[in-house]
Picture 1 (tube, rainbow, N blue to C red):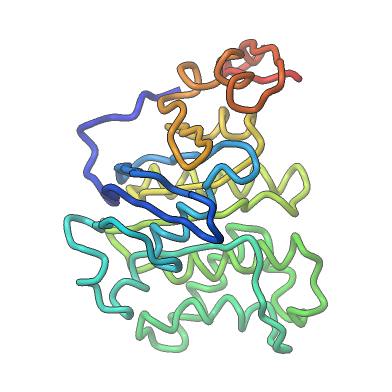
Picture 2 (cartoon, helix red, strand yellow):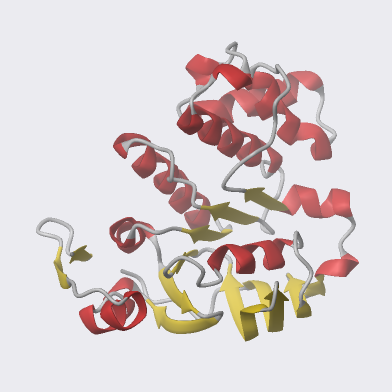
Length: 263
């Protein structure tokens, strides 16, 4: 795996974040820099603060501290401009309207001011990338959970199609409802986005998928970083037992060499 490079440009710079909800501390004096050209996986047990961090980074939840996108405070970005450069795929969507799948994907083009024909072409390309083009005319409420997840991923890809060299993609458990093939396809698309220069942040529970696809792995617990580095540095049996409270074995993948975790 690739060691995170200090020479890549910083896309997100979060400084001294503090967040408490319901009397529980979710983030404590938390600072992190996320770079363009990297896929960063946020790992950790339930309640570690991963999804809360993602929501703070994208502005869904307010926290004490400061967050910069490309050297500018988040508050300095207009909502429409930010929507062209920051795309977020949440765990769940409350969309219940009887739109077709393609119409949902084309919603991603709303901030872009594209002609209808161009927006449709971009949406169709995004749907092909995540393998939902065959669902184009299906009504969204009739889709399975995994199909809905992939449709929304295509919507986010459409939204970021004009982001250029200032692109941030945040994915919150994007593989949770997916079958094996679509888990890998989703993360490969995210990896390709990073290779194209995007800063990609993925909250994920599957340590082996993180090991295979992430350039940088950050293990969190109790609102703090417990380990940060590439897969070889982070996915050690001692780190995993200390954070997750479960004994595991870690060995190289027999073909590709990245660490795999066996419980």
